[in-house]
Amino acid sequence: MTAPSRKSVLASALLALFPLAISACKPQAGYPLDTLAPTSDLTKSLYDLFVEVTVLDIIVLIVVVGALFLAVLVFSTRTGSPRQPSVKHSDMYLEMAWTIIPALILLAITVPTVRVIIKTQPYTWPKDTLPVEVIAHQWWWEFHYPTLGVETADEVHIPTGQTIHFELFSKDVIHSFFMPQVGGKRDVIPGQENQITLVANVPGEYYGQCTEFCGDSHANMRFRVFVETPADFQRWVKHQLEPPTKPTSGPAAAGAKIFADAPCAICHTIRGVSGFSKEYTYGFRGPDLTHFGSRSTLAGSIMDNTPRNVAMWIRNPDEVKPGANMPTLGLSGGEMDELVAYLESLK
Ligand code: CUA
Image (cartoon, rainbow, N blue to C red; front, side):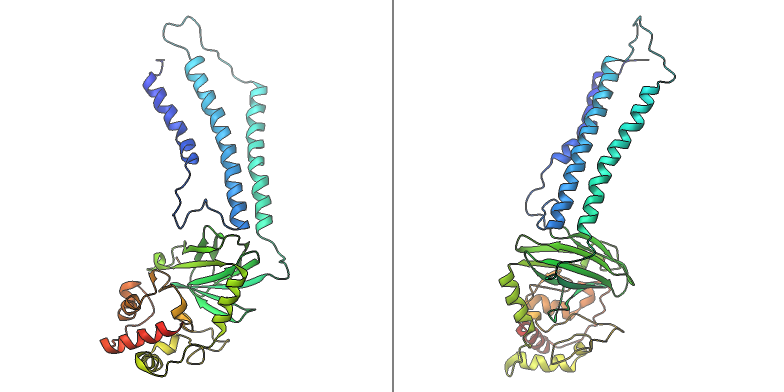
């Protein structure tokens, strides 16, 4: 057998160290879907588990690569060497060692994993827990606060320091609710209620995204999570409970009439103007627009909420979000401006 060349040994060494190099990388700040930037008790637990298992993996890697190098560089037989390679058919101690050690490694990974699963998926919740129903649709997210009477879409607000219990439902196909910095990821399955429980710690605006392929506009099914101080959250709730603006003159008033006459009102609720009963469960239902103007994004959170973008969306929803259920209304330029003015007035 020929001895391996220095070059091939070096190449194997670099290859073996590659995972080490990756795991040592600190992601740069500013990635909105960064899974290594925890801001809640749940994501902190997941992050700590990830670090724990990665450190263990690195130790295993070092031992294995070390043994490989010893075998290649120290204990290998070279051409012309007078020594014969050792031949051994069985060794009870070795057999025991490589059965027991991997079993211990698996145990060292399993115990903390199960501990985190039990800790992060409780069956009981503190008295002051805030339940938030998340209803996934092709392709947008509906959020209900059953104890507060608030309904909104694509942007969920939660306070810091309070247990939040997300109850996940799907109206059509399987989606996945992924908010990496705040709450990890969980599938949203028709006919089954899944849950996420967390306490958020850091106020801020966080990105979310559907991560289960759910049709044409799966990639356009995003959302935002606004984590707020309790005082800011109370202010938001109070504002959401107020009735919508009722413009009496100008383009917004004309737009309100267009909204009521056009098919918009069939699918979209504006409290006191159009809407569904609580029992409504059939057919298509679009986002609640009562306070649409106060949201920062629209259309599955893929665009900033600006008059220009709202007009672009209404003009041809299918172009912005392929497969969208919203029809093209065929409004004239003037009517469009008025409808957009009305929607944006719904602060
Ligand atoms: Cu919903 Cu992908």
